[in-house]
Length: 270
Image 1 (tube, rainbow, N blue to C red):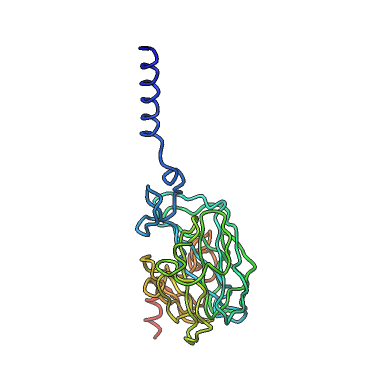
Image 2: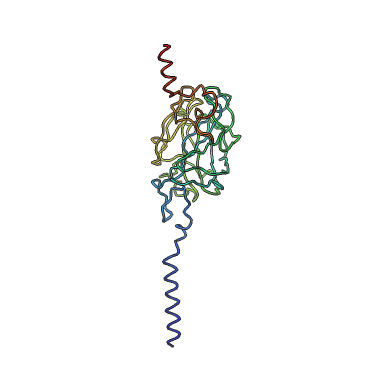
């Protein structure tokens, strides 16, 4: 009898130890670079990879290519193998479904990852070669771009406000971030198919939207970058060799020069 009690006590102790040291399923599945806390709950304050800038130039934009730029808020390099980007235009763009791109490679700590999309024939700003190339033309009047940390299947239910709308409860488990914008004509058919809290009517074939914060509000967390005008240093797309003006080439027409020597010469010959 004593032996049986001893075995029961030993078994109970083993179970208790296992419950103490084995993380919950949610904790075990939390992936670095995603906005989920240790309990597996969505929390935008957790440093993560974001959709930093989106430019859709269609076939006649100001910048040479449409593009999607990601930014890594964390202090660690993130492996993007198996991650996905999904994009879809508003009704005006005619997209009938979400299109997915599987990502490859890594994104450096506090670094960028550029997906250069199809050519727009624009000449005002040469977009540098991307970390990944995608022969997909992004529409210039209403667009949603979402980021996922794993496989995902999207249908018509992935629409509307992904933060507090009626479909937010059905947000995919691998959801990481979204950046969405309406066309600047402010027409209903130029509204993005999905968004975070709200969206602004700011997009055109000249204008991109760039993230300035991530509070889950696409209407407030952005600034507009006009690629038909000089672009402030640091705000253009960053390829593997750096931003356009950092590469060993003639500075793009659309890049605002910051060199003190050039500024001096410009002032001297004015």
